[in-house]
Image (tube, rainbow, N blue to C red; front, side):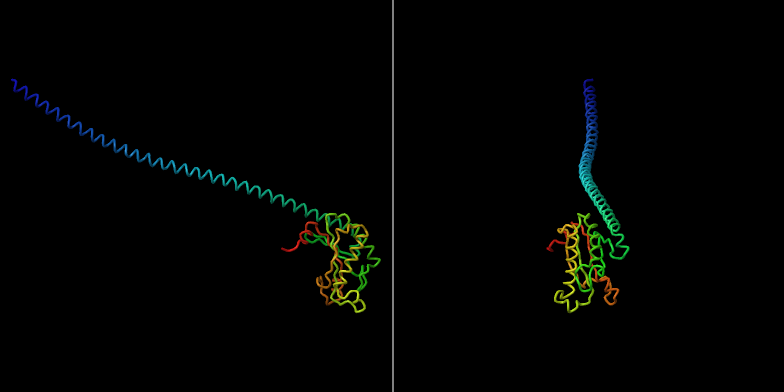
Length: 257
């Protein structure tokens, strides 16, 4: 009886031990599976962390780019505003020049109708062209009485343009100065300058401030018509009175670098 009990206990013990070994293997497999899942999760977390860092870098870059775009937009708006101001200033200047031209033509309308002078507008300048035959005898620089009357009217009209420099330029045709007059005017250079100077002095006498007056001569070297015909030579013998903006005159007077 005692022997049977011992055998039964041994069998039960063996069964228990055998049962215990199977549970341990299953646990180890489960533990290995969990470890693999944990490793996969850790890898996924690392990948997500990289994506997060990349996203943060992209976001920072976008913010920087957006700030740059904002600065560019501000700069563009400032440039547009500056261009609009320039446009408005140019329009105002153009309107002012047109008003000055219309006023000058109106003041000298009778002389224009008689053909004694011509008023022209060219860019930033107004020009009064005086016909030489009304103001000077051939080869002479002394103002004629009839020319003085017209020039006085011109001087009165020019007084109102206080922001203008008045440049008086003398021109001739290409016919040489006659021999009897060559002692006084060796060439057409001297004759053209003398005529311009006399016009300037007369304008000063009628009240145009002398600091706004400039006299110069171009002789025969800036014709407006052919010197091959009497009509062309007559057009080339002229006096131009140019009204130039003070700022433009200052720019023209600057020495070249």
